[in-house]
Image (tube, rainbow, N blue to C red; front, side, top):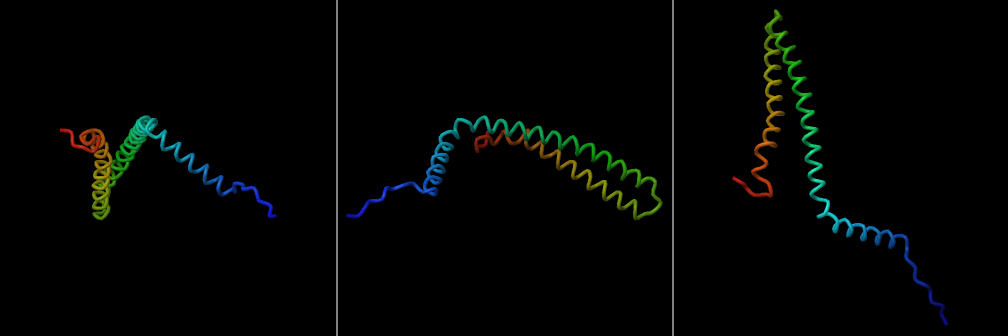
Length: 118
């Protein structure tokens, strides 16, 4: 007579069962926490963007002032041209960074829920 072996769970089976159960738990709890997670993420993004705008404004003012000083007090035509080019780049970059805030604040509410709200 053969002796029957008692079946045991292997470590791989136990890990897979743990993975499946934790995944199912996450699927069930997602709708509950989704609103608070997105609200918190929106708050964090607005705070970070506000800090980026503040830093970029200060940096733009300082570098624009340097470019203007170089343009006004330089005797070389090449330096004046480079300063003018840098001043244009600074203004365009600053406008783009602040334009993103305008889009996020005033245009995205029209598209909430994936539909146009006029």
